[in-house]
Every structure is written in C-alpha cells, then in structure tokens.
Image 1 (cartoon, helix red, strand yellow):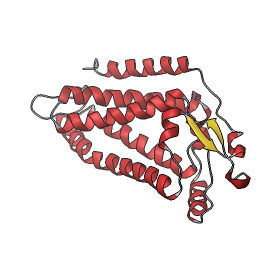
Image 2 (cartoon, rainbow, N blue to C red; image 1 turned 90 degrees about the vertical axis):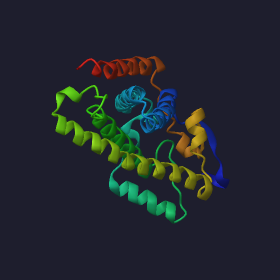
Image 3 (tube, rainbow, N blue to C red; image 1 turned 30 degrees about the horizontal axis):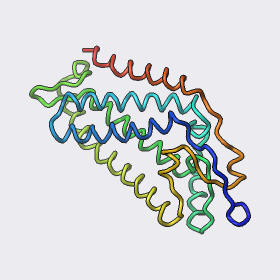
Image 4 (cartoon, one colour; image 1 turned 120 degrees about the horizontal axis):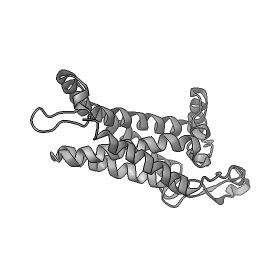
Amino acid sequence: MARGGETVRVKAWDLPTRLFHWALVAAVGFSWYSGENGMTEWHERSGLAVLALLAFRLVWGFVGGGTARFAGFVRGPAAAWRYLRETVAGRHPVYLGHNPLGGWSVLALLAALAVHATMGLFGTDDILYEGPLYSLVEHGTAGWLTGWHHRFFNVVLALAIIHVVAVLAYAVLLKTDLVRPMLTGWKQVPPEVAAGAIARTPAWIAAVLFAGCAAAAWAITLVA
C-alpha cells in the first residue's frame, strides 16, 4: 500500500464484462421468477439467455480485457489460501480485478449456472412443457434431469448468497466497495496496483461474440 493510504483512480472493468455481470443477474432473477410462477415459455427463454451469457463469458475469459481474462484472476489453491490468511491478519492485499479467492468463487458460480441451465434444456413437466432438447433423451432421463434441475437451484442460490455476503463483508469490514466499480468500471487502488491497468479489447469484438453466442443458444430450440 502506498504511503498514507494513497490511491489512484483507474479503469478496472471493461464495459462488456460489466454488461455481462448485470445482464446475468437480471436473467437469473427472471428465470427464478418465471419458474416459480409457471411461465414455462419465458422460463425457457431466460434459461437460454443465461446460457448465451455464460458462453460469451467463457470466450471473453480468453480474449477480453485484462481483468476479464481467466489468466488474470484464476490462481492455485495456495494463492487463495494465502490471500485469505493475509486478509484475516489485517493485511488486505489489493487486486485490480478479482482476488485469488474471489476468482474461485466466480468460477464456481458460473459453473453451477451452466450445469443448472443445461439440465433445464431436457426438462418436462409431464403435462404440456418439453424442453428444447427433451427429444434427445429417454423420458425417464428427462424426468431425472428435471428433478435435479429443481434441486440444483439450491446450489446456485447458496453460491449467490455467498457472493452477496462477501460483497457486503468487503463493504462493512474492509471498507472496500465492490459494487460501484462493477457499475462504472473505475476503482480506487494503490499506485503500484494501478500499474497493471487493464489492456482493453475493442467492444465491437464483444458485440460480435455475444451475437454468435445468442444465435447458438437460439439454435438449440431448432433441434427438436
């Protein structure tokens, strides 16, 4: 940390990453709402939107801005443990993007959402609704996947709660605002951390990538 707690304002998150983050929050929230209220067609659409967003994030994790790339925040278990130990000891290391522990949390949540949404593609309510990939499996398998689709949401919910609690803990205990940077892209960090300011990938590349992912998600509905 710089002398006297000096910080500088630097761009931490690129626009595509921020749009992805809040679009995923909205899509998952609407998926829950539509599922709870029997809006099966809209539930399917929001689930496909989740898959399109996840596919985009996967690709963006290799070609996006510096803090968006997996290589920029995925560390080994030892690094995550070291970060946790330093933070508990009061020596909170500052990172421009995700810290090593937060990186694993992000991966876990994205993976859980991918598993949950994929199972939903094979779903059926045994009355009127059949998922876009229902015809590719036996009825019994579809029923099994549907059951797990419902149960596995508890895993997604638990990971989401952990994520929110961590954000609140950073705000209250560490006086670190993680929400504003994900809204504006800008973050206050020590000068030595700012030296690693993100390399930017043109936004038009993100637009093309998402269009392709959205088209691929829509194409799933044509399988049957």
